[in-house]
Length: 496
Image (cartoon, rainbow, N blue to C red; front, side, top):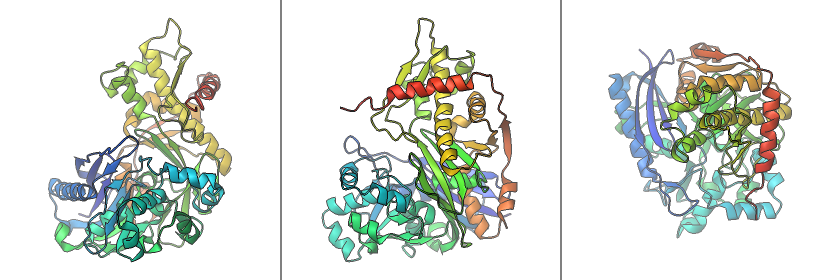
């Protein structure tokens, strides 16, 4: 038997999954990753804990599968994106905790860059907005605030990387300092047209090039694990950021094919082909993957801040439900929302609005409003926010969505997926295997090592669980217009 080991390092946990050559999960192990909150707006992880938990789960997953490293054909890596680590090249020790993608401490640097008129330059070169979300300003903060860090960086003593780079360094015993193009494209330092670190952007943020990793394709052998790690030297053959890996795991290989991951928030990615699109207002342009064939695939990305966390709010904030699993049946217990609209802008609105001052709203309440109406309105808000993003994407790219493939926790909810199909007017496809992020890492590694000889063979390994076909009720347009009216009332709410 041929097996692939996928390392899936996320924000809240480290997981490892063993897949077989048919793309089926054989075993999985997971450990929680502690969050560190030094002060409001700051979020950190201990890089040593990231590595220790990831290694422990890799060993546990192999043990659960009843196999040894000798039966593993290749290793794939997928990771929380933008989270930034800096370590000493000689000792391998981090100079500070990792600064997590959610962290906002670099906002003053971003505000300064915007005030100096650099937004168009950054967006044109990187496809990104100037935001503390991305890695470049996190790296700048570390070099400016950790004693001695800048001098060490300039003398070549330090290495920077996103979590994939940190894991690769550890797995190879410090022999390889690399990142793939998908992760590099999330740093705000990488030119998505030239596919290289950009000297002008490095100068803008005062980043010495010596700290940066080598950029490699997403699929291809970049090194081997040190034999002391798993007992054998194994090829590391696939690397991608979590959202790009999920897109690959969903076999979104055709222009217009799209996926939506319903998590705490949601990330919609649309394959827009091998030509980098022009900057698009409200959308991010990102490298989807590079298979080492000389062609790079790009994606438009819409980041929705609050979807699953709105369901958590129903449970923990206003106690409408006791368990997240109750949201579907409660929402289905009423035929409509009774005119209620919930805009879950708890932390502002992401794509396509990008309004940090927007705040949540419940509109349309009457004396007849019940908890079921509010629950259904929350579920509908997830579908509406996805439509906001997809409409903006199709308008910008001039490409229609062919279908929407879904994963993440809320993808088990049939009512949501039917509402989504009705709003988008395309089929919504739920795969049999929802671990699409880790599956994407396994596919990338297996493709490089010949486990899957072609993209078609990867497509064949993807299996459908259920398809939701649009069955409009006739109220979709009116419901969506009501949603847009509600959003307009939430915008700029918290601005002084």
